[in-house]
Image 1 (tube, rainbow, N blue to C red):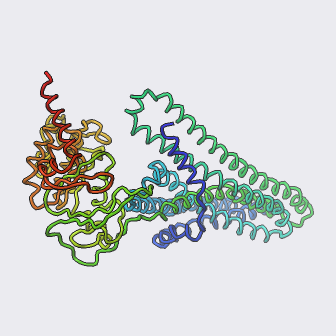
Image 2 (image 1 turned 180 degrees about the vertical axis):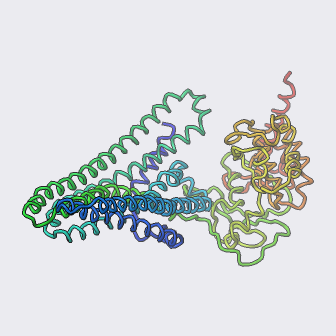
Length: 604
C-alpha cells in the first residue's frame, strides 16, 4: 500500500477527463503532414499504382480463361499473359517497398516530432505539474500512447486508403461485369457496418482503460525501483511483488477485454466476405450456365470479390488502430494542454546584473496544492554577501530558496530581481544568474565529470577539477577506479550522501553564477568538512549573492547576515552576536549545539 493512494488518485484523474474534439487533436498532426507532403505524395502514388496493377490481373485472367473456354488459346499468347502477370508482380514488389519506406517512414518522423514536442513541453512545466502527474503517467504518454498514434498514422492510414481504393475500384470492375450480381455480392455489407460501429465504441472505452492501467503499472515499477533500499529495509519485497502482480493482472484483464472486441471484428469481416462469396457461387454459377456471363467473367468476378475480403477485414483492423490512435492522441493532447503557472514573458530589453539583488516586498506564498501560507508578508533585501537562513522545520527556509530560484509563481510586485518585477522577466533571464544546490542532490547515471559539467557542458577539465577542489570532493574522486570518468550509477547510488552533496556543490560552482542558493546542501557532510569548504569558498563568493540554509551555527557564524524564520515570518535577523542577545530561539539552538559538541569531545 506504499503507493496505492497516489496511483488511485492518478486513475481517478484519468477517468474524469473528457475527450477533446477531433479538430483539436488533428492540430497536432496536420503541420507534420504538410511538412512531409512530398514524401507522402510519393508513397501514396506508389500505393495507388500497386492497387491499379493488382486490379488488372483479373482482366488478364479473364482473357486467358475465355480463350481456353472457347478453344482458341495459343501457347505463345498464354505465355505472354503469364509473363505480363510476372512483370506486374515484380512491379508490385518494388512499389510496395517504396510506399512502405515513405509512408511508414513518415509515421516514424511523426513519432519523433511529437515525442520531442512532449519532452520540450514537459521541461517547460512548473513544480505543480509534476506534483499532479506521476512519472509513470508521463512515460506512458511518451511511449505506449505515442506508439498507438504512430501505428494509426502509418499502417492504419495505409490500410484505410488501400481498403477504400480497392473497395471502390473492385466494385466498379464488378459492376462492369454484371451490376445485379454486384448488388447481390454486397448484400451482407450493411451487417459489417453495423457491427463495426457497435464494436468500435466499446474498443475506444476499453483501450482507454488499457492505457490508464499501463500508466499505473509503469509508475508503480518506477517508484519501487527508486525506493528499493527502503523496501528492503522494511522487508516489503513480498508485499510489493504482490501489489505488482495485482496491477499486472488488471492490465492483462484490460488487454483481454480489448482482445475480445478485436477477436469479434476479424471473424465478422471474414464471415461477411464468405457470405458474399457463397451468393456469387450460387447466382453467378447460374449466370454462367445460362450464358449471361462468360467463364472468364465469372473467374474475374470471383477474383475481384476475393480482393474485397481484405478491405472488409481491414475495416476491423483499421477501426482498431484508429480508435487506439484517437484515444492515445487525446491523452497526449491533455498533457499538451497543461500550462505552467509561472509567467514567462519574452525578453524585451537587455538585462545586466551589476549587484545581484533580490528584493522581497510583503511576499506571501503558498504551494499550489495547499491553501496555507508558508511565507507571510516577508519584506527583505538579499544583495551581495552571504546570507544565512535558519529556523525550525517547516518555518519556510527551503521555500525561500525555491521561490528565489523561480520554481514557483509569486504575486506581482512581491519579488524583484535587480529592481525588476520577476514576473516581467523571462524565466531564463533570472535562472541564468542563479545556481541552486538542494538538500537532496539530483545526479545522473553518467560519469562524475559529466555530472559536474551539467550546467556547462563545454567546460575544460581544468575548470571541472578546480570546482571539485573548491567543493572538497577532488580527493574522493581521485580514490575512485576511473577517477573523473567513473560512472556513479542512477541518482549517484555509488556515492555516499556527503559525496553526492559535494558533487552537486561542485556543479553549482562550475557555472559561476552571480547568485548561489545552498538549501541545506551540505547537511550530510560532517561539521568540520563543511566548515573547511565554506572557509575556502568565502573568497570565491566575493561580489556574489549567497543564500545558505542551515541549522549549524558554526557555519552561520561565518555569514554576513543571519535571518531567523518562524512560522513563515522573519522572527529576527542580524549578526551572530546580536542574535545571541536578542533571539531566544537562536540562543537555544546555540546552547544545544554547544552541549552536543562538548559531549562529542568527551567521548573516548
